[in-house]
Length: 208
Image 1 (cartoon, helix red, strand yellow):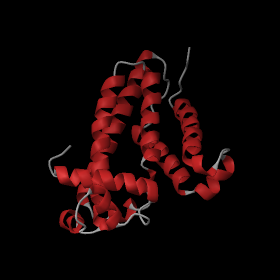
Image 2 (cartoon, one colour):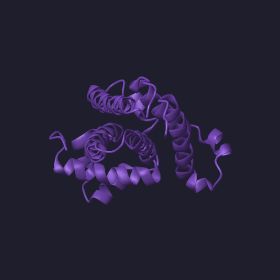
Image 3 (cartoon, rainbow, N blue to C red):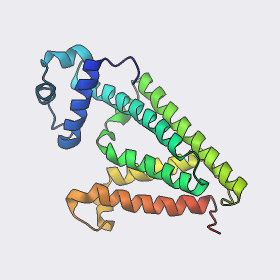
Image 4 (cartoon, one colour):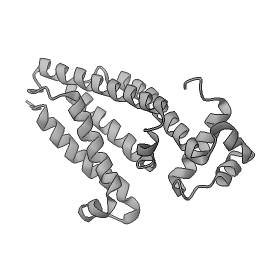
């Protein structure tokens, strides 16, 4: 983790993330966070300024952790076949988007004011597209892929489709069978299956 987060800040952010994931941003109070983190309420203001600003810090913290875990993940799959790598890369990003779905909607506003957050996201996106590009070229060279779609278009397709489903539950739940409490899990499976079919079609995947 980068040095700009102290041990105490990381502790508070970890606690806040768990509470917000469970109760939502509006349903989680500063008092809830401070009580769970075993700190004085004033410490939140001292470290972050406000609950809203803390959310911006939390998102940045999450992006940094995701970048680190992605680097480890990419290292693990680097020697796999191109089709396996592509599938796992798609699954990774979809899973991250759904796992931390409670950020979406809040961040759009914060991005206008937080240059550090923009930079962190940009670095993650460019790292991912570079990896996708490498995998597609490897697949074409080995003959399992026939086409070379732009990696930034692949990322846009993955993120755009996932966020649409996350943000439009009232619409998409009409097409997802299952219980309301399992909507996100069911929706993630459905959109992942659709993305795999679409993206493998775009690269012209040939199993033979």
